[in-house]
Image (cartoon, rainbow, N blue to C red; front, top):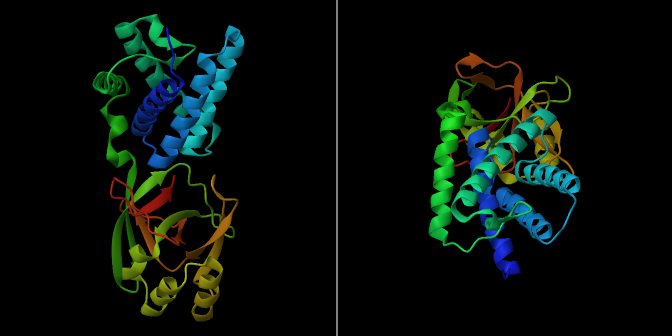
Length: 279
């Protein structure tokens, strides 16, 4: 069989991307499409290497475990060990479902060391993806895909004004206010506008730099604002401004264990969320 390297790479890139989309859906964890694409690309590169390698079964198994962890971390970020394991298991279950369907349709020749290489149309691949999705929906249950489990309804109140937002419940949001240890609700300044006074709103609009924001805001309200350090997979670290004088209600229960972190940009997800809340 003649194997074309570009076909091998892009086929596995496509398959990995579909599998990661389904992993995000079934796990209830939101991930940006570009992160899923990056994870799919990592998996595709490893698939090319595996396809042309003659590894001992034990070495191949260890390699695949490492690959699964790498793809999961690139796609969904660094999370707790328990959450990463859960994502890996869902990713493997969906991959196994795809492999089973492809084996049933094309036989063993479609797989080589876990890499996909088949001469089929895009239509056939999409049909296989749909069949795997429906089958896994029955296994995982409808409840795992309910949007209510992924979001929280949040009400913010200050100065007699109220704003209601839907917040994405993200277990990867481990931010804490350093003094009180409270969890952080991440919101953009524009979303907060209805509960901010005009002077505060103007300062937030005029600068995105957190240090300058904090300095100017503290001149007006010395105790209402603070600074929260953060770190992400794509950034070494930074700071965001926190605000403490806004009452937070989550799912109709007052949340005194949260403070608000004001992001330099707005939050917007396909589910209509405009805030991110830690779990």
